[in-house]
Length: 360
Image (cartoon, rainbow, N blue to C red; front, side, top):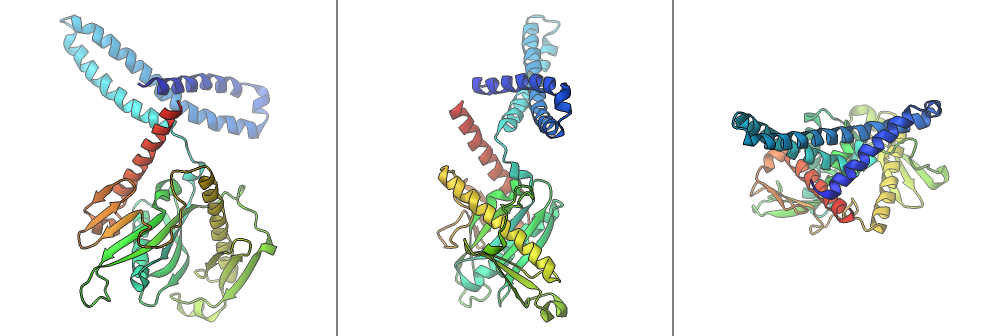
């Protein structure tokens, strides 16, 4: 194990002793806010310190087994113990490295997934519909709930823009790296000459704001318009001015919702989306100032602004950020995103671990 990693883990072991002492004090137990905060830290530190204690135990077992190799009667058992200890130490070290990585508190939150058609006209809108279907199927496959917050459908199908709310365990942390430009190369259904076209969409994944930390919206900064909903929804949705559009005047950011059956419901949903977009704007600006390694979430929609290419003639998906190429595009479009998301998370963990080593 690297020295910097062992030093970090020794500090966690020491911190666990401090937290055990704090939780035994009556004044701490009498302050519920402080007690809950310390209890949460205690749970996190216990997970790390416990794994490290197991690592040290297996190191001792390995040393003892190696000492037994010189005894002919114990050599076979010693070799078996050495093999088991070495394998478990490798796994424990990987676990500990992941546990030490910085955690984003937003990773556990639900998220808004926004898909916008970009370059490519009708074909771009059709691809936006395909992406919405891909993400919805993936979410369904792992038990997440998907709700359409707003949808602006195109004339030939698909969406000019669609906003989905995804609810489940660790949604934002799993989907956050989907943000950026998505490029498709295929023969459009409307193409009579069989030529391959290139179109693009942008995807933005935004954590749902914490109610206690959400941006406070000043009513004077908002313009709220109502209008008659369009698209699917039956007779009711087309008879009343139930759709709501909210404009944040200082920034020009717009959110709308027409999926619900009441103006009150649509207004509440539109305000939720607006808060998420404003929070994401602040987050992106903060990351830019801090020289974040990743770009802001929402791309320009231009063909050259892409994180991923979906090449249908070759059945190929390529994620350009991590040089990942998979020849299972049809399966991916049916929601089989696990391999892509796993690779992106692994690359991010490696990046964070490298940063820890540099700063150690």
